Image (tube, rainbow, N blue to C red):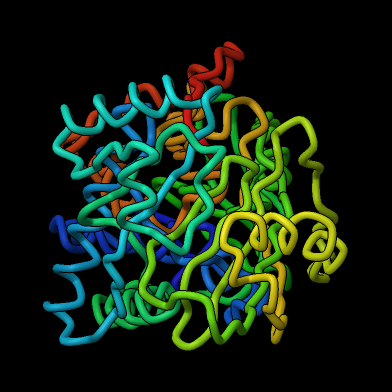
Length: 388
């Protein structure tokens, strides 16, 4: 068996696979291996996410990454002759009077970056969404294109098949030990004792990134945070609707004849998840989600929960934004971590970014320098101003 690779990627979720795919697509001819401890992906963030994509951020880099992601999803589906189920119905972010100014500023900035987002007054909200209770809302931001949701599972599985056809080795196992000097990673040892040497090592371990990094004596502020999704049935609720995001953090969107809903808690209330805990939080639904949905969309008073599942996102505790690029000391270690719930939509841009750094030593498409490890080492957060 091969024991030496030019690039080893730890983690074959959507971030790791996207990195391998872009390496090959950009012409990298060296040997690549992806190490994955659970090829069933039963608890993978990729397969348990809500699979949304939106451009409504305040940071330029996040808007640009999302725009690249939407373009990639559309083009990849055509190239592979598959239907990724991209429902381009937009996100509707609602704001009370407290959040109106920030929402307005964000929409202006998004427009400057060519994101197709409209700011709606309460009158326009009522006109376009008569089923929505908007009496307490001051404004709404609606994505008119390149926003919505798609089938992340199909994207992930298709990309995995593509990289396998491109002679990327998929290796089952987990990293049990690490051999490194003060300046570079030399080799990894898998469970069972197999040792692999590498030219470049990419940390794409998702919610486990912080734990994995400690093996290299690197402090990475990434930890698992649990997110529960609920599938509900409501015969009278609209099925032609955007992803509606309430200022509370509760959101809902159609899912065929059902609706999918969830909740993103305030940062100060969000707690680290037990890595083995994937139990749905039903109390959350009863106490927060259902009452909020019923108040915002009165039809949801009569909903019925039909399914629920929980997954973990790779939460960056410093600023909830991606950590991308090389380590400041270990020159051949690259981060692709801390996406904090937006990993699926940012995976195409993140994968290309890391691939460009490995091939060219610099970003070529999007300048994501501000997401580098420097800010982590210096504890200088790069914060979003957004309504979620």
